Length: 489
Image (cartoon, rainbow, N blue to C red; front, side, top):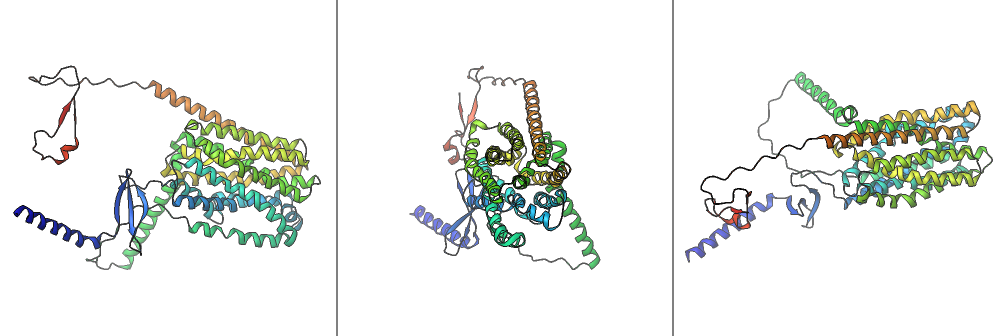
């Protein structure tokens, strides 16, 4: 009777304590499949998961969920940003005629736009860089597929923007076309609104009871300046990966190869329409070539992403990327044969197939070379290095056209540049892999420590090893229990 009453009193006390603590526990934690889910209360009284947390409290990638919304937003951002500079070829002749400029002077328009896109703090850079970075945080297991799908945004832009630009150019001229296209590009703000960062559990701050006395204005100013300087130094160390460029040889090789590649990777897309129209092709057909290039990328990139997400290609992304880059560079030499529509059609198909693989694996290879926590800084430094060659590439091609009077020299120079960068990346990573294998093979295995001999009086076999294995019943036993551990053979 006393035991029943005691249990009842204890149960009432426990329920009272739970009821009293319930209002204070707004965010709740629940463990599921090895992860901790953070919940917050919503208006209808139900709990909604915020972010998955690992056992050590770090945020893990959801590999789905809201990540699919972020993926769609990234696709649209890349469609509106990366593909737009390539459409400048449609307005290239009009700009040259309007301002009485040479090819070198006119080519500064797309080159500055592309350079600022990769390493400005202005314009497209505010859309492109965060979109690529946040996608890498939302996907880990499906990262190759997510990067391949996001790269279809460039193909989507190449498929639609040239046709739209050609229609607007016919109806409104180049000035009216720029106004309409500028309004279309404002949709990047909508895409950015759905990109929310992955955050850990939110902790409520403690109420301030004791306030420090007011300080003098001079001391406050000095403290703010010191804090501003410390924050600036921290931001530079965090967002500029100079230490990776110095210490990580793989990242250094990749950065050098990609920087050299960008000298001739984008130039053919800028000069394709002027090259075709200079050989008596209608501008609508020339714009159709860019659209076909985009269609090839849209069709090819999703299966490419699924294919290279398979475990068979783990560790081979760099070599596949380099081989595709080599094919992409050599395909530019097709334009040197003739400027007829069938030849240029074969060129854009070959270029599009290789471009699909390059675009699908470019960020995946970068993510494989370093830790994901350093990816934003590594991408920022790589973008700055790329911006230099992206800036000087089209003007150098313009100088070549002005001096020779022919466009096919541009495609020949781009072919040599991109192909040489592919060979450099392939040889460099092959040498690094061989060096790592030799270093791993040359490591000596430390000698095994012999097991301790059993104490005297022990009847166990001396040549067998024993270990203590806890059982499920151990948790319910008292600390002083004699059967707390079970020794098994």
